[in-house]
Image 1 (cartoon, rainbow, N blue to C red):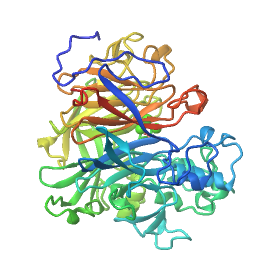
Image 2 (cartoon, rainbow, N blue to C red):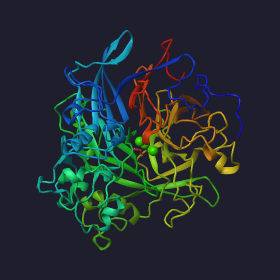
Image 3 (tube, helix red, strand yellow):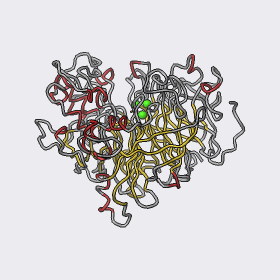
Image 4 (cartoon, rainbow, N blue to C red):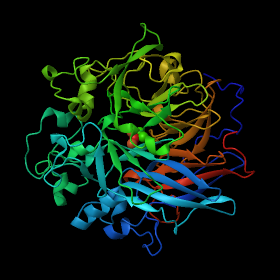
Length: 578
Ligand code: FEO
Ligand code: CA
Ligand code: CA
Ligand code: CA
């Protein structure tokens, strides 16, 4: 592929080169400013950022590693944002780098997770954080939640502390997000397994292994000080995580609700759209090598004239999983949504499924039972408001063509897929509840300066816009596709010339892709939301300087790096991207 003359009517900015600098770079005529960073005080009187802060301080501060987020406008000069704080880096959270965890350190780590709800106000024409906002709120790994929907109250969700199985504590590993037209925020629990371990040997059934749960945690050591995370003491606790949680950002006292009808897996985001007939449809990826792509269709219909009637639409409906077909050698084809309903498609007691709750709690096993396609790590899904096409990033997968259950196929066409790709499908008859769809690959990332053929990428990839591991995606109102990366930033070998993680903008009509932003050292770019006038865009810089890579973003000097939300505007006040 070579850099072509532009024929895009949508892309109005000048693309920028790859970068390895420890800064944010945006195109000519744009400006990028820090809105808020890990550790900033959310309330009047809360302690200022300091690495030595204790758990009580962190509970009143912006959480770590911000990811998905949504901007909700309230009036001309007032708005609220809900922002995920996916996880935390103990190497920066503590001076001891996590090597000497006390009970309060565990509490601090738990408080760095969850969601930060922040109020914004307009000041000198720009959206800024308002520390006096009454909607400012922290939701952490210890906030009280309600379990709702078909699995709520099931025996597998009961613990000694909660014999009802309906009152869970906390949300964590909140990756990406979604939003509803009735004004609520959806936060998606992803790698929840990473904080569970065991202080003594415990016999765990295979259902734990499928979700990555074992006696060994990922190094957070919560289980050493908090029995809730010790699988030997509280074996049902992990069943209460891995869900989509609905939060009302307008009511700081509202109890978040874990919507079990949407299934339990390692949720990436929740792309919600209202179908032409009023049904609520939610597309969801399960980000793990060889896992699946899901769709939820609500039983009842959205009622625009009665917002209160929509509040529990996500509690009743049908969950489906995707099966992709292609003719031999073709990178396009058809597909179908297979229903995950008790008694259908082999989801019966003979095959180990005793009820609908069972299917939802073990959605991954149900997907395997019905023969769902194993995918190259489905990350974000986004629906094009102009065409009703749906896009999903398949970020990379070193197991493709290596593990028996993950053969090279049309929709996952490269062995060991190092670069990732984006699949796009059109629901049959533009009906998001239809059984069938047709699909193709919108983009195959690659390195045309190193490889030819599929590893060089699709025709819309060239030396000036190449990248790897697409992850966050989202459309603006005009139908521009924003693509964020969470990939290798070695800038060497297969990845030479790609630089740091970045954000690009694609024109779904012409196929053109142009680089819009480059991030600081060892970060990923993730999370995107717009003000409704499309003149302010917010994106996230997550884990700059991870694994002690040399970053001092955003404060400079000798400071430790901090994940941050970035506000992007045009100097002439125009629409972002146009
Ligand atoms: Fe949290 Fe799959 O990214
Ligand atoms: Ca992601
Ligand atoms: Ca990722
Ligand atoms: Ca991440």
